[in-house]
Image (cartoon, rainbow, N blue to C red; front, side, top):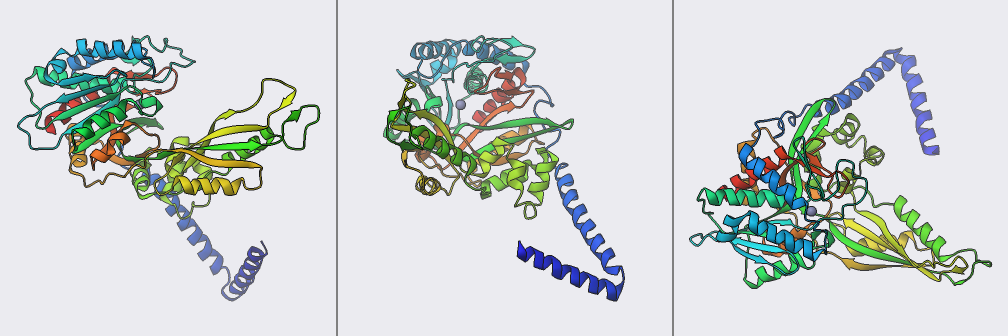
Length: 501
Ligand SMILES: [Zn+2]
């Protein structure tokens, strides 16, 4: 503080000497410089908002093929009525049977394995092909319906005003239906693929894919399969409205954050609640969790996320654009600017969050001797489970507790933008939507693709659904819906992709 004081005092002396020698010239020069810098900063943020993401949305352009779209909408509406919550084996098997009935051409032409856990693996052979195959992934299971639905019940599959409502509409039955509708219609037209195509539909993606995707990966590994591309859900065609303008971009995730879990165990002597000690196991654990919440790992912008921010800058509101376009100036305050946006923060730092607690008694007259909490962490590339463990141990070193690493997921690699099949995917998008920018990004959650990642150098996380307030949203939330137009866009994309690959 005293340093700043000294500096300010020296500046004032210099300023008064200068003013004494050169009159008010100095003040004018200073005012002009400050004004110029301010105009520069504001202009950069303002101009960034005019960058070319506007008017390019597939929702605003020519609608997709009406017959294909109507059929796909009927299929999705029926698909939602199967309550395939992870672990509901009978619903999953019924859903498998529905898909077999609904897509007779697909079932006749492809090898289809309906696995006992509810997963499905399909293989569209191309006997003459010299090319390595491509794998398209999605999942048949959904999260529970949850509370708060206002339009219909979660498994009604209601079609209303051009939308299909229900659990799984976006995540991820819309993708499954779009892929199968595309394949069914292409087979009807007599299309033969240039290379083998695999479709892997897991039945437990929502709980980690440890049964469905893992067993399909083992089957494929035993056959020695290598894929030129593994394409799973992740980014979408994002369509947002801001200040009366429409912004759209296809966000393709080139990698995903690694996941791991930690356990904190607080131990204090048990006893009668009438004679408590100064600290209790519950009190210590609560203090630890408050510290974890307020001391999140620092912001770090990795090159892949920098590309995403630069590409998507126009779609952010002015405050964020100010911080993103003048990052050196706003370095110190950017956390304050970004922190209300959890989606953005998830790309900028490793996150650690308490997810469950255990150990307290039902009885109101006994102090528990130990309590535990589980923390879920999502690691930015470059961070390791061990590094975060050490940071947590350092943060909580003065408390009577233990922190341990209980599980860690596989690390995902970042797919290079030079991969030929990434370029081909971009071409497919650009041929149909020339104005639509394609932006690489990082997936902050994780999907089934990681189970297949050692069979390919090109693992991309992207579904061609258009998502946003109007097009489709609500995965894992109430009133999940997908617009019929968005579903039609996805069918067209997969048709084009399957023809091109
Ligand atoms: Zn999903």
